[in-house]
Amino acid sequence: WYQRRVRGVFGKSTQFECKSDASLKKNSGGDFIKNGDDRKIHTEAAVTWEYYDSTSSSWKASTEDNRFEIKPTLIGNDGIRVSPLSRRDLQKAEEGLKVRCKLEYQPDTANNFFGGSVTSGEMTLKTAYITSLTASDAGPINGATITLTCIAVGGNKPAFTFKSSGRETVDRSYFEEVSAVAVEESGTTYTAKYVLKTIAPTVGVSGQAITCTANYGNAQGKSKEVVTVTTYYDCKKKSFKNLNPAGNGATVTVTDNADGSRTQKITCPAATSNKKIFTSRHYRIC
Image 1: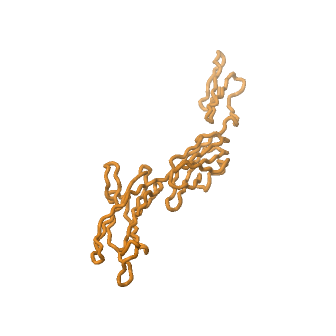
Image 2: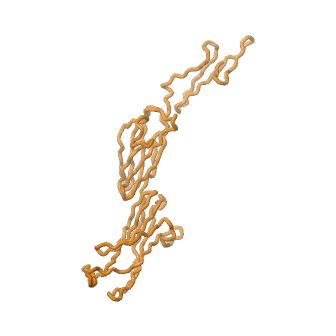
Image 3: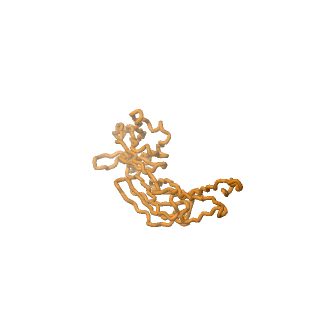
């Protein structure tokens, strides 16, 4: 017996399992052959693993890749041998990785068992991870509403959470929740959307790093991605002053740059025979 598909989370570890008969049976009904102590008689078998190398288009021994590890084989009370193979530090590009197990049974002529070789079918790795995390606006003006979209793939629906600044939620001093996390499913793709309102500028603290976590459960693990949202001041709600004395003929022009900033330009009047005009390098005063 073997698992046709094995799930694993990107960056974590997963395990393939190969199951085989370990105890001798005397008939098709599954009755075990037992010794004089009324114990099952187990077969001796060497278990090895192979993986399919797409580069060379050939099967290779798992020992050629140090991210594989053959775990100890266990025999249960049901007479089934379970032989695990672990794979650590899963990569996104490994989606579809194929492995198989091989058993070399040793003969036991005393019990009329002559050994043999068995190769399992292919077991295929299906990776689970967050494919993208985006903000509808990563540089909003304070007071704007933004939508965080976190997309993940996997064999089972993960639980999504959004956090920032090491907190259990997004930082409530910078964001206000507009609507709770909503998840849509399409086959093995899951899309979580979270709507927030910005309530304080974060440009002075280099923005807020928001983490989306897709939790696939204790057996598989979690996948995380981060997006930084930098909230800017709303300059339209701010008054801007200049130090230029009134009535000296200078013109101050304000330009809204449409990105949360404004530029002020001062134009001095022309000099006359009895009035000299100069511009302060520090204050732009005529």
